[in-house]
Image (cartoon, rainbow, N blue to C red; front, side, top):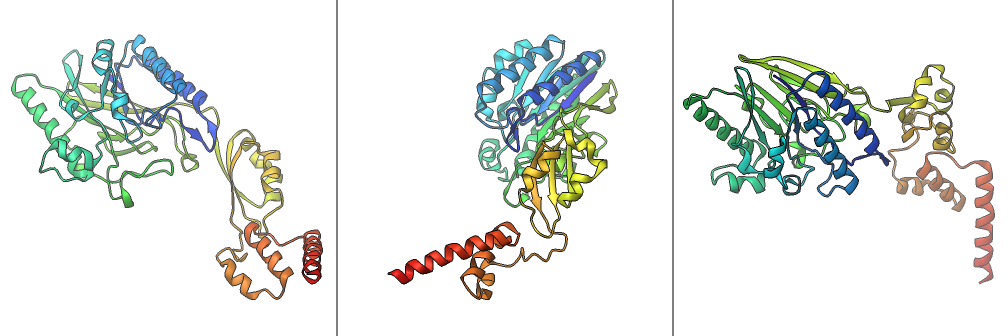
Length: 388
């Protein structure tokens, strides 16, 4: 049996102001190619299908096209809601969609209703756990459930183990696979994920998933193995420059009668690469080794001691895909950590105050022509004051 583990599609997301709908359409096309070429039996989406609770019409239409394409290729779809999704909206029509091979697991009541996948002697029971907001989920899960991420997820897992034991006691052995949208201990984060709790203390213990045939995690955007049978698939596209060095795609899971037999990364290419450039403006513009970055989305960190004039305009003359521009003087001596009030206290006259302010807000001293303009303006102001 072959199962494709994906998560964190974030349909409708933008990347530093650039719409990503066509890029997302591109990864979905590659996903569909994988389903066909690898003869995938089921596609898992472990939460954050959408990027926001109220997705746009074109975004909903894209998901509709994706689900139709996957099921037409012969695979079933099992998806859970993440912290970015509206569980109620995403779960609408679930009982009807089930008949078409799309299984929505967005509510607590569905936790112990696994999707049974049969392939010869192997029966895989896929349990989908939606994202559980502790304060909201704890009362519904039981009075003794602690209103923490570990508490509510622990109760959900307990119920799944109980259901699995009941099925085996009835003579129907199954291989339990769990889908979870959470931050598991040991996971490496990226800048594009939303904290699941204040202070980032929402991590759940890894041993919570001991004994499951496979745990398909969602939430963290970098593909990573936490245990041989516990994986984050990562997001199919990079959603922050902190993911520039990550390989994106899905995970092809193979399960036989005896359990898990293999986990293989499946790469999907993004339409544009991400590049992290660092150096002086003149150095970056002249560096012949950076040719490949001319067609990439770029985050540029300029290390000039003085902030160059028209920096974004000039950097984009060579790297038009520059989306983020950061200034970090190499010397560290431009007074960036000094408050303006302290600079003001050292000023000797009005011209010094004006030039000091200009230097403070843009990290570059006033040019001679700018100083001349300040002198002219200050002269007119003083003359007007005298005239009064």
